[in-house]
Image (cartoon, rainbow, N blue to C red; front, side, top):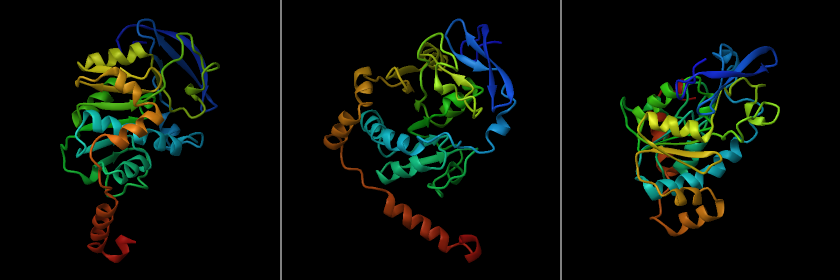
Length: 270
């Protein structure tokens, strides 16, 4: 099999039981270290429930990253946005960021929008461009990383994303929990080198904390500042003392939703 990232041959690495029933071959690229599954024919079954019962960190993850994203926006992007959360799940992160005053919009083809209704990409003008695209815990789900990132970059020229880096070149499902074959959704696993090569394909720079937060952009970013923003204590101080206060969008969002509901027939609004 050819590596999805650098188009060089990948070696069969191990056979894993996916969704407790499918014997699936994983391939490791000999050049960039990227690990991918065979063609994931089981994905329709894996996404019968978009958010798996094993994703117990969904809420804490959104609360953790919100201050970091705020700091990164204040430092390098226009706070007035707009911003797109790609693969935004239930819309929780979008709601949190809008409450902080940043006009985020949600996009997710698999999951129901529970917390950010009326602030979905389906409600936006066609060909809307975004100041920054975020994608938390999305990249590992991509059977075609290059094709999907190309779509993201049509929406915005910078992508801030999280995915855990391979801890060592010889990692296996037995030694690293992040494979999670039980859910069948993690089909692409990245080394730092593979992410750098992926960014280079689009003539972008990669900035990374070396663990799980990464930024692809053409902007000139100070790597020290980027890593600094992944420390919760430091990022709180930055947000407190830098930039102007950003009024929450909660009240204006409420009025927008309220006005839209008043225009609907009663049965539709309920």
